[in-house]
Length: 80
Image (tube, rainbow, N blue to C red):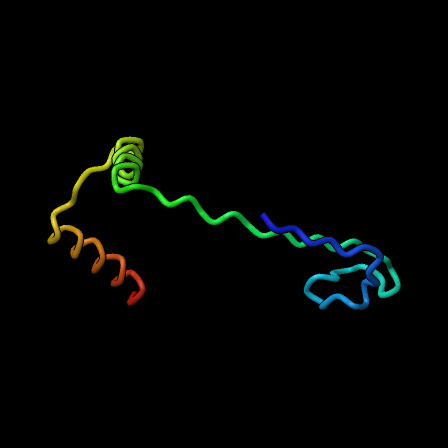
């Protein structure tokens, strides 16, 4: 993993988004590190996670007609 360190940098040399509330004359250390790429899951791992989430929240499948009815009822609340 790559890492770059800059010592004794004036805060005024930093972009505003990084400088924050530091005074312009302050000296800072800037460390730049490459983030590790996110771990990709295998299909089996992803499926296991989905199944465990469903079990944890007591997942109950809904018929598409019922889902449409619920969505229309929510939408119609805004018309009142």
